[in-house]
Image 1 (cartoon, one colour):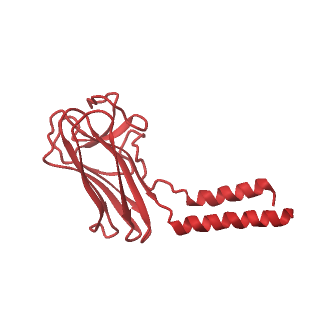
Image 2 (image 1 turned 180 degrees about the horizontal axis):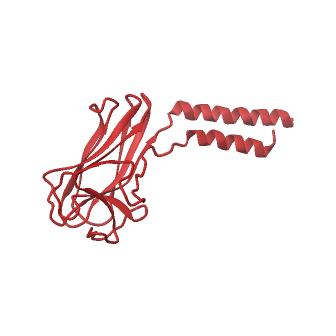
Image 3 (image 1 turned 90 degrees about the vertical axis):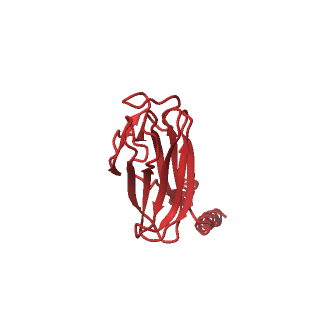
Length: 199
């Protein structure tokens, strides 16, 4: 087996372990909440203006992000998206969260299982200092063929001049050690076959 063929085969095996983000439009860079189910006071804005007084920092990816209770509105918004999962598969859920000014804001961040009720991961995230968005990361396991990610504004949040911001939402499957071991065995097999042919 030629070296180029070996390298190509190894690259294909490695690509098999790479996972794509299961969340569509997780960076909001299309300037809208498309692919998301939106209720209440949530809109997409950019840190350069468009009605959000972002006191420092920026979106970690591009310019756009989701703003909850933007424009001093009632804190009643939610964003959700359903995505495909596999039973027992481990996933990492990540997102960035921050505020637009000096004042505390909180969101409930939740992953619901395939029945739409079982909570697979949940936390209330809070920030009170404008600047760079904070990064959050959680692990959960699939319990069926789908799950739903949901961000919900908290009614007790102040609505005057301070908004919650969400950006860079992602869910990725984590390769299990057995899968990585199989890939390693495959690479070793290809290398051994190459050496036998050369010898």
